[in-house]
Amino acid sequence: MSEAPTFIVVGSGASAVVAAARVLDAGHRVLMLDSGDVDDRYSQRIPQRPFATLRQEDASQHEYLLGHAAEGIDLGGTGPLAQATAPRRFVFRRALQLLRTSGDSFAAVESLARGGLAEAWGAGAFPFTDHELRQAGLDAGEMAPHYEAVARQIGISGADDDLAPWRGALAALQPPLALDHNAAALLASYERRKQQLARMNVRLGRPLLAVLSEGLGERRANPLHGLDFWSNAGASVFRPSVLLDTLMGRPGFEYRSQLLVTHFDEPASGGVRVNATDLQHGSRISFTADHLLLCAGALGSTRIVLRSTGHYDQPVPLVCNEHAYIPSVRWRGLGAAASGRSHALAQLTVLMDPTGDQQHLVQAQIYSFTGMLLARLLKDSPLGLRDSLSIFQALASSFVILGVQHEDVASPGKHLVLRRGPVPEEDVLEIRWRPDASVQAVQDAAHRGFCEAMRVLGCWPLRVVRPGAGSSVHYAGMLPFADENRPLTLDRSGRLRETRSVYVCDGAGLNYLPAKGPTLTLMANARRIACELAQSLCKR
Ligand SMILES: Cc1cc2nc3c(=O)[nH]c(=O)nc-3n(C[C@H](O)[C@H](O)[C@H](O)COP(=O)(O)OP(=O)(O)OC[C@H]3O[C@@H](n4cnc5c(N)ncnc54)[C@H](O)[C@@H]3O)c2cc1C
Image (cartoon, rainbow, N blue to C red; front, side):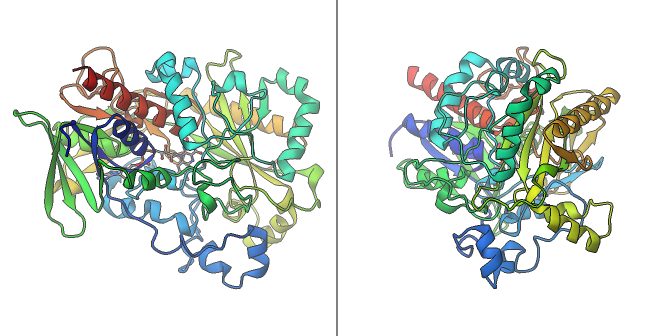
């Protein structure tokens, strides 16, 4: 073994794999500690054929589309796991069993899976604008090269269209994926009514998706089977396990799973000790390294930090995008045949600029019916299930669903507190979520604006479905970047204050979440932290 400093990376999610790859590239050794639950049932089971063909021809389709135990049928409300098909349930399974949260009807969705939450993500890959990065505590100039490097590493398809000036810059793009029939019609309608929509401060364009339209290394372009919420043919959708698989073969990298990391400490003799519970044997085990990169997800890293630093019962901020669905019918398309081949992820992105200065953008992704699992919205229909079923079947090929995201920033009514349990594994993360009263009115106005824009585009918006706080699964703000030296904050390098060698590389550091999926930014920031740390070690 070389004498290069060692890094322990906790987690194998989007932030972790990018950070680990970067320190490994710099010649350092990496030990990745992970809970690492895997899908042992479905991954090899789903035929690589179009969704429509499977629906017509495969007599055992129910086994994977609905699940062996019909676990893909969720009769509760449209909540945070609205997109979690049976083959994706493993992403949440162990976290639901082992991690404890309570309070305020806030759905705190976490993952203890190999690859984390992005094994189930929708692959919407937005850069933040300069203004949004500043609000989040990040520097646009520092982030730009890391956005581009991550985009080249994971593969992002999209276009430079009307959204580009509002969306944030990204040069390393593959061509956009083919649109389905609904999206093509909406885009054509937008081109005709662009001026009217511009007066409403609304723009429409292609989404940026971490999905390949061209091969990248061993990975293949998306086959347009419409099965992206069930399987990942050719690894065309970036999922952290795709990058983890390549790390596994590299010298200097070691992956240990079946571990629940509980806390760290920094011995006076130097380095950092990471303590974990072996999930198979129940024993306690510790590991040492020169540096620790915490990438356990924003909530997971916060648990580990609060426990390690003894900050029980002390509130820390919580930032989370609120979101809503607006199911709509494209009435001009009623009765038209569905297009044969398409992917199931977001087809289009809508941006609205309610303040006219691009500083409080509201964003929506437009999905067609297979993508957002029309059946799940049946439950929200005002009609009975049987009536709704026949109506929804008739409307299916002209159905579009907007997934709306709202910005969020820390405020006094929204925080987390770690309460001590009988053993560290049973500590409870208590959540209080009371947004300022003005927030709901701003969001309602944006929903009305989106409904109006959909009418202009030739759609009937049916209703606004609010799946509840927390269900965007975009969390941040607990251990914020701060210039002043305060406990439970990060310095610009990502180092946790009051520690020598502990760095937080996931969303916990971001002070602000614009109305966008944060994951590309989490990856770019994790890469920035890992890169700066690796470089500073080389200079020593
Ligand atoms: C259905 C769905 C759709 C989404 N769509 C989008 C989207 O389109 N665009 C977007 O930007 N974002 C999206 N997201 C959010 C996105 O998935 C997350 O922002 C992102 O995956 C977070 O990555 P992370 O690496 O920071 O943390 P996580 O994904 O939470 O990974 C945490 C890792 O740490 C490990 N871990 C945690 N605690 C411990 C512990 N104590 N001990 C050992 N290991 C531990 C876990 O096993 C896991 O490997 C979506 C999420 C969901 C659920």
